[in-house]
Length: 127
Image 1 (spheres, rainbow, N blue to C red):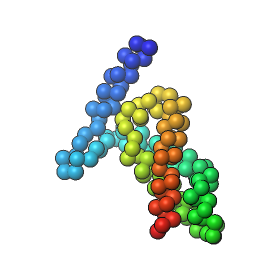
Image 2: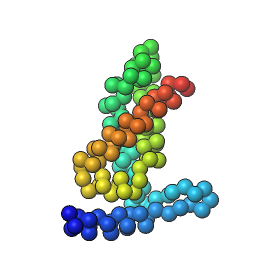
Image 3: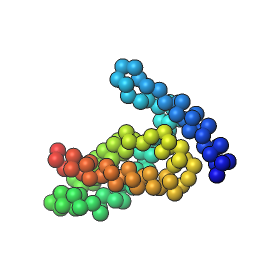
Image 4: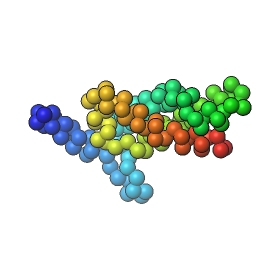
Protein backbone atom coordinates (compact mmCIF):
# COMPACT_ATOMS: atom_id res chain seq x y z
CA UNK A 1 0.00 0.00 0.00
CA UNK A 2 2.83 2.42 0.84
CA UNK A 3 4.49 1.61 -2.48
CA UNK A 4 1.31 2.42 -4.34
CA UNK A 5 1.01 5.71 -2.46
CA UNK A 6 4.65 6.49 -3.21
CA UNK A 7 3.96 6.02 -6.91
CA UNK A 8 0.61 7.77 -7.06
CA UNK A 9 1.47 10.84 -4.98
CA UNK A 10 4.12 12.22 -7.38
CA UNK A 11 1.91 11.33 -10.35
CA UNK A 12 -1.06 13.21 -8.91
CA UNK A 13 1.22 16.13 -8.08
CA UNK A 14 2.63 16.17 -11.61
CA UNK A 15 -0.79 16.04 -13.26
CA UNK A 16 -2.18 18.66 -10.92
CA UNK A 17 0.77 20.91 -11.76
CA UNK A 18 -0.21 20.67 -15.44
CA UNK A 19 -3.45 22.51 -14.76
CA UNK A 20 -3.33 26.30 -14.91
CA UNK A 21 -5.87 28.96 -14.09
CA UNK A 22 -6.85 31.37 -16.84
CA UNK A 23 -6.48 34.86 -15.37
CA UNK A 24 -9.31 36.37 -17.41
CA UNK A 25 -12.10 33.98 -16.52
CA UNK A 26 -10.74 32.00 -13.60
CA UNK A 27 -11.60 28.78 -15.41
CA UNK A 28 -9.31 25.78 -15.38
CA UNK A 29 -7.48 24.95 -18.58
CA UNK A 30 -5.51 21.77 -19.03
CA UNK A 31 -2.34 21.19 -21.02
CA UNK A 32 -2.15 18.73 -23.90
CA UNK A 33 -1.83 15.66 -21.64
CA UNK A 34 -4.91 16.53 -19.66
CA UNK A 35 -6.75 17.49 -22.85
CA UNK A 36 -6.07 14.04 -24.29
CA UNK A 37 -7.29 12.41 -21.09
CA UNK A 38 -10.42 14.58 -21.13
CA UNK A 39 -11.02 13.66 -24.77
CA UNK A 40 -10.73 9.97 -23.88
CA UNK A 41 -13.24 10.43 -21.06
CA UNK A 42 -15.59 12.30 -23.40
CA UNK A 43 -15.43 9.54 -26.02
CA UNK A 44 -16.02 6.86 -23.37
CA UNK A 45 -18.94 8.78 -21.91
CA UNK A 46 -20.52 9.32 -25.33
CA UNK A 47 -20.19 5.62 -26.16
CA UNK A 48 -21.78 4.65 -22.84
CA UNK A 49 -24.52 7.23 -23.43
CA UNK A 50 -25.51 5.58 -26.70
CA UNK A 51 -26.08 2.29 -24.89
CA UNK A 52 -27.81 3.86 -21.87
CA UNK A 53 -30.13 6.34 -23.59
CA UNK A 54 -32.65 3.70 -24.64
CA UNK A 55 -33.09 2.68 -21.00
CA UNK A 56 -33.75 6.26 -19.92
CA UNK A 57 -37.36 6.94 -18.89
CA UNK A 58 -37.30 10.55 -20.07
CA UNK A 59 -35.93 9.48 -23.46
CA UNK A 60 -38.48 6.67 -23.85
CA UNK A 61 -41.35 9.05 -23.15
CA UNK A 62 -40.06 12.02 -25.12
CA UNK A 63 -39.05 10.13 -28.24
CA UNK A 64 -42.14 7.96 -28.78
CA UNK A 65 -43.62 10.14 -31.51
CA UNK A 66 -40.34 10.91 -33.31
CA UNK A 67 -39.34 9.45 -36.65
CA UNK A 68 -36.31 7.15 -36.62
CA UNK A 69 -34.08 9.73 -38.34
CA UNK A 70 -35.11 12.49 -35.91
CA UNK A 71 -34.56 10.07 -33.01
CA UNK A 72 -31.01 9.36 -34.25
CA UNK A 73 -30.31 13.08 -34.68
CA UNK A 74 -31.50 13.90 -31.16
CA UNK A 75 -29.67 10.88 -29.70
CA UNK A 76 -26.43 12.23 -31.15
CA UNK A 77 -27.22 15.66 -29.72
CA UNK A 78 -28.02 14.22 -26.26
CA UNK A 79 -24.84 12.17 -26.14
CA UNK A 80 -22.75 15.15 -27.26
CA UNK A 81 -24.32 17.13 -24.43
CA UNK A 82 -23.53 14.32 -21.98
CA UNK A 83 -19.91 14.29 -23.17
CA UNK A 84 -19.59 18.06 -22.76
CA UNK A 85 -21.16 18.13 -19.30
CA UNK A 86 -19.11 15.14 -18.18
CA UNK A 87 -15.80 16.81 -18.97
CA UNK A 88 -16.68 19.79 -16.79
CA UNK A 89 -17.14 17.62 -13.71
CA UNK A 90 -13.98 15.49 -13.97
CA UNK A 91 -11.08 16.30 -11.67
CA UNK A 92 -7.37 15.63 -12.27
CA UNK A 93 -7.53 13.03 -9.50
CA UNK A 94 -10.37 11.22 -11.28
CA UNK A 95 -8.27 11.15 -14.44
CA UNK A 96 -5.24 9.72 -12.66
CA UNK A 97 -7.25 7.00 -10.93
CA UNK A 98 -9.06 6.12 -14.17
CA UNK A 99 -5.76 5.94 -16.04
CA UNK A 100 -4.37 3.46 -13.51
CA UNK A 101 -7.31 1.11 -13.19
CA UNK A 102 -9.82 -0.09 -15.81
CA UNK A 103 -12.46 -0.76 -13.16
CA UNK A 104 -12.16 2.81 -11.90
CA UNK A 105 -12.36 4.03 -15.47
CA UNK A 106 -15.63 2.17 -16.04
CA UNK A 107 -16.98 3.42 -12.70
CA UNK A 108 -16.10 7.01 -13.60
CA UNK A 109 -17.78 6.75 -17.00
CA UNK A 110 -20.91 5.19 -15.45
CA UNK A 111 -21.05 7.91 -12.81
CA UNK A 112 -20.67 10.69 -15.37
CA UNK A 113 -23.34 9.27 -17.69
CA UNK A 114 -25.75 8.69 -14.82
CA UNK A 115 -25.38 12.22 -13.46
CA UNK A 116 -25.71 14.03 -16.79
CA UNK A 117 -28.00 11.94 -19.02
CA UNK A 118 -31.37 13.07 -17.59
CA UNK A 119 -30.43 16.75 -17.73
CA UNK A 120 -29.28 16.46 -21.34
CA UNK A 121 -32.37 14.52 -22.45
CA UNK A 122 -34.64 17.17 -20.94
CA UNK A 123 -32.53 19.98 -22.42
CA UNK A 124 -32.53 18.51 -25.95
CA UNK A 125 -36.19 17.49 -25.97
CA UNK A 126 -37.24 20.97 -24.76
CA UNK A 127 -35.64 22.58 -27.80
